[in-house]
Image 1 (cartoon, rainbow, N blue to C red):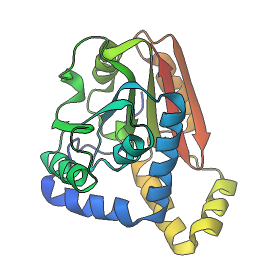
Image 2 (image 1 turned 60 degrees about the horizontal axis):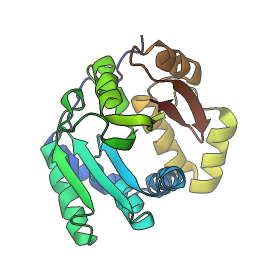
Image 3 (image 1 turned 135 degrees about the vertical axis):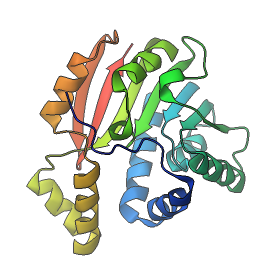
Image 4 (image 1 turned 180 degrees about the vertical axis):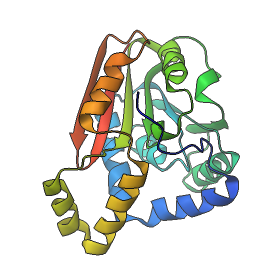
Length: 220
């Protein structure tokens, strides 16, 4: 059983603006959001997707611009985050294209078999009842629908750390590695054991690692 690294599940509204500012200004996070958007859009260009723990919505804005055929939904427990995401959608001209609402992943406000793809970015380590949440995700996915969950890796290889230092400089690399250490979900081996042990009936389960980030991949 992987222990939650952070006990706080919903980021308080007064912290949300600071998180959003850091995520918007950080070159590493901007590149990471673009990479995730590219990976999602390479997998799906039409249909419905859901982002759990969407935060200020930055990844979804990139996806919406890259794949106009998608119906995109984002949920977050933090009202402050959802307010920021809605404001961002207005500024980006994406009102109606990307929908945000306050909701709990343990009681998703969507019918069975509704989504082609569900995703979550750096949110799983906050989840208070992961088994329950995975059951809910399984419920709202269509048959053969996919789940992508991105989390920081505990055991970032030294060559990856060195590559980050070369690309972003020592200071930004140090900040990233420190944040990754605080927020890290699991080692790759621990993540693989975690997905194998889930009770939800996913037919395929796997974990990939790249640049200090794990991608948990599951298929209904």
